[in-house]
Image (cartoon, rainbow, N blue to C red; front, side, top):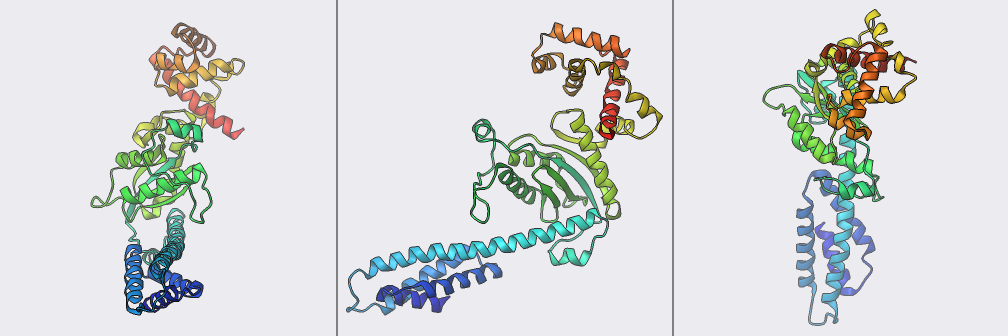
Length: 360
């Protein structure tokens, strides 16, 4: 780098073409990125070396305008060095991210290789909490003006092209996960969501609720997540399946975004286990097939935690109109939504029906 800077200073003084020397300087900057030298240190070295060499080479016979050429040279090589350094850093980052994806996929597949993890600088934990995450749809430009996003705006992909809203959101979520989760948190995430593995050791475990809040802030909209806690490595495939079954259930029931645990969904989870009980529950709401508005009303009312005012607003109804629909549901199904036992039965039937519809 020092030799390249000397030649650049000489080229500036002689008003010569610096293209070849600049290319060597860019390669030197890329080497600095591979060695982990900070970009600020690289720029400082370039400026100091070019300025020092320029001062040493300048003589009373130096033509006028040399100072202007020096600053033009520094401006051009600053851009070139930044591009070379950042391109290499992005390549290294992508390679590291792909390697982490491979380690995570191996864990979720039950074939984890500790040596592979060591190569990535990851210390495998004895057990992990499994977080299944559903990310919200990306905002449109009009949505962005009204959102409460707190993360930085990223408008370009690593190759310089304009990045879609989903890509920007995913990038922010991954950054928040790395910042709040710690170095040993692993994830496989796409634009719709995915799986996060959080080490279960007490010394390094982040609080799940706080982690979901951080991911929500990064996404710019509420996210939905379910967690299965402290699963040994050999049980991770089954635990991930369970976490995603819970997440699927939350979405089917249109529950509010947030973090849910097995304790919150144990009844619904058990209802979905195959057997004659599930088969019978799946038919309870058949009388509503001819009344789709009634079925939608029931789904909405249960999803809103039986809040009549909220359900009425969402359906654009007066509360009296909502009560009328609920009474009709009771008459058609034989289970009164206004009764504690009846609403429990109808909720179970709604869960069972959603799984029967999936089988169809």
